[in-house]
Image (tube, rainbow, N blue to C red; front, side):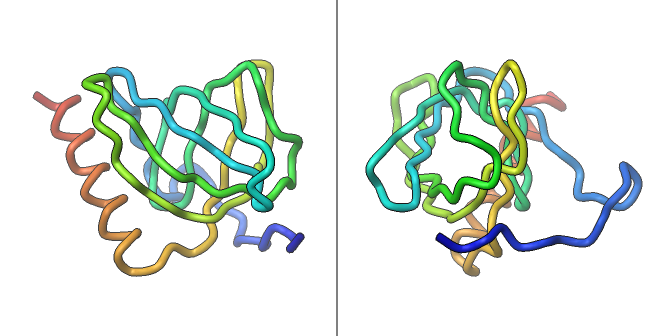
Length: 121
């Protein structure tokens, strides 16, 4: 298992804005070796990571793969990106994504744009 990459220290002013996820969006996280799975509710998202609300959690520094997100209409949206559990708390866990490839990054930006439009309108 690889170690989580160290990213530059950020402040609320310098970090990418975290977008609240409106409505019900479920996600499945798998251990990088694919042997264990945790599902939960995506509460915050940006291209650098996400917060997954879930009773089941992986410990901090665990390497994971985000496989899918499913909207409340039960439509699966495949999004595959590797990441690490940056922290866990009593409600869930924060996931730091590794650098996504160009197509995954475009997909994440499209999802974020849709979430931002939904909360603005």
